[in-house]
Amino acid sequence: MKVTVIGTGHVGLVTCVTFASIGHDVIGTDVDSEKIELLARGISPFYEAGLEEAMHTETSSGRLAFTVDAPSALREAEVVFICVGTPARADGEANLVAMEQTASQIARHAQDDVVVVEKSTVPAGTADRVRTTLQREGKGLRFHMASNPEFLREGMAIHDALEPDRIVVGVESARGLDVLRRLYAPLLEAGAPLIVTDIRTAELAKHASNAFLALKISFANALARVCEHADADVTTVADIMGADPRIGRAFLDAGLGYGGYCFPKDVAALKHLSERFGYPFPLLGEVERVNDEAVAAIAAKVREALWNLEGKRIAILGLAFKPDTDDVRFSPALALARLLLAAGAHVVGCDPRAASGAKEEVPELELANDVYEAASGAHALVIGTDWTEFRGLQLAALREVMTYPLIVDGRNLLDPSDFVGSGFWYYPTGRPPVIPEPSRSGGGVDGSEPASAPRQPTPLW
Ligand code: UDX
Image 1 (cartoon, rainbow, N blue to C red):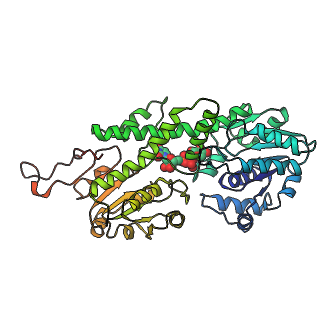
Image 2 (image 1 turned 135 degrees about the horizontal axis):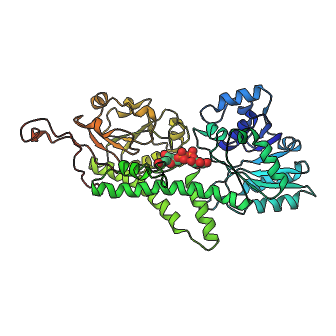
Image 3 (image 1 turned 180 degrees about the horizontal axis):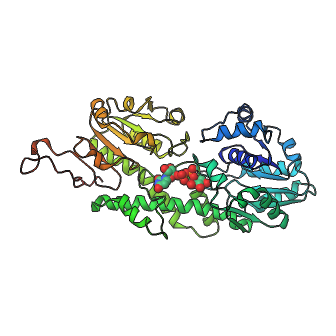
C-alpha cells in the first residue's frame, strides 16, 4: 500500500521504517527541512537502537523515501499517518496546533477516499476536530478517519512496533478497518492481537495506558518513602506484589521517577481533559506530585548525607531520562542536577549517549568523559539513570578518586550486598542503606569483623 507519514520524530520515523519493512511503499515528510536532509542522507536525528540500520535497508530497497514536499507525498497516498508532536501547554493541555495544520494540508492535497490515521497521542475527541477541518477545507474530499495509537518505548521502539502486544484500531467505516487490517496483515498473521473499537475509545486508551504506568511508578515511589521509615526494602516489596499476575512486577521500580517526552505530557493531558469534562481526576494530580517529590527526596538525601551542599562536588552518573536513549527531555536526572546546583553544589555528569543534550539543557553542568573522571574529587556520586554500563562500578577504583566514599542510588541499580565492608556509604531508594561501621568501634563485641548485614537506616527527611 502507499503510505504517507507526516512528522518524522520518534514515532513517525519508527512508523515509516516499520511499514516499509512489512512491504509497503512509504514516504515520510516533515516541515523541518534539516531533519529531512539528514534522513535523506541515512542519518537518524536521534539515537534509537537498530533504527538507522533499518532505515538504510528500507531506503536502499526503494520502499522508503523522505521529502519536505508534503503535497506531493500526499497526492499518491492511500493511507496518511499523522505523527506530529502534541506537546503540553503550560496548563497541561495538549497543544494541537500541528494536528490542525496537518489536517488542513491533508484536506488540500490528499486523494479521494484516503484513510487518515491519527498516531500522535491526542486527547479523546481530537479526531472530531480533524474531521471537521477535513470537511471544511477538503472541497468535497471523501476520507475515512481512524485512530491507531502507538505503544512504543524509546530504545525498544523497533521491537515494539514489529512485535506489538496489541494493535489498537479506532475506526468509523468499513473501509478504514479494511485498509488498516491490510496494512498490518503481516503482523496480524504473525499473531499480534488486534483490538477494534471506536475512535474516541482508541484515543483515550493511549492516555489511560501511559497514565496508569506512571501511576504504578508513583505508587512504588510513595511506598519507597514508607519503606525508608519502616526499615523495609521496596524492591522486595515490589517483587512480592509483582508475583501476583493481577499486579505485575513491571513499572514498580522506585527511584527518581518517570521522565521523558510521553509520561509527563500524557498524565497532564489526561488530567486537563478530565477537568474540561468536569471531573478533576485528583488521582493524576497525586501521581504528578509524588513524581516531583521523588527527585526532591533524592536531593534531600544527598544534602542529609553531605551536611552542606555549598562547595561540594557531586557526580551524577546518567543524564538521559532512561537508559539506551540520548533523550534528556524531562529527565529526572537533570531535574536533580538543577536542584543540587540551586543549592550551591558543583555538579558533574556523565552519560554514555546523552551528555551533549544534557549540557544544552543545563549549561552549568560540568561534563566528564567517564564514570571515574566524573567521580574524581566528588563528595558524592548519584546514580541518575539505570544504564547497564554503571552496574560494574569498580568500588576500589572509585574510592581512590572520590573525596568521600558515598553513593546515592537514585535508580536502585546497584546491589547493596556489594557495599558491605567496602568502606562506602551506600544510600539506595526505599531500601536500607549500607554504612561503614564507625572505626572507633573496633568491630563486633568479640573483636570480629563488623556485622555484614545492612545497617539500620537513619531517617533522611
Ligand atoms: C512510554 C511508554 O512506555 C510507551 O508505551 C509510550 O508509547 C511512550 O511512553 P518511554 O517514554 O520510552 O515509553 O519510557 P518508559 O520505558 O516507559 O519509561 C518512562 C520513565 O519511567 C523513565 O524515566 C523510566 O526511568 C521510568 N520508570 C520506568 C521508573 O521510574 N520506574 C519503573 O519501574 C519503570
